[in-house]
Image (cartoon, rainbow, N blue to C red):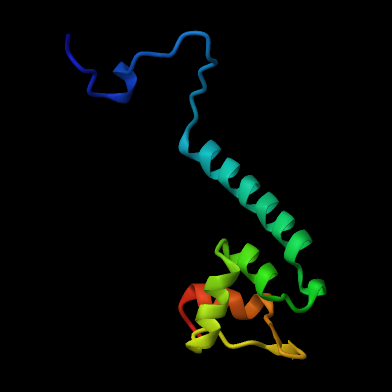
Amino acid sequence: MSIPSAASEQPRPTGLPFLRADDRFIEALAKVVADQVAQRLEAKFGEEAGFMDAAAAARYLGTTRKRIHELTSVRVLRPDGRDGRRPLYRRASLDRYVEGGQ
């Protein structure tokens, strides 16, 4: 039994719909999905939310609150404000951290 080498030779799964898409369709689909993700992120973490505490910053970055505190203690992340002793972060600052700039 030989193994198919090209995509056109791949066996089609039975019972599942098959969709052929050209590059233009895939690019258009990617743009629609990216726009929807951006809208949902803006709605959830928009600038109107103001400051985020460590827990919200961790959710935004997809990490743990402990990691946010570690990054803050070694001064990789710098709080944009404080509520008493509690450090607060803005989304733009967290985005700069992810992009590699401070």
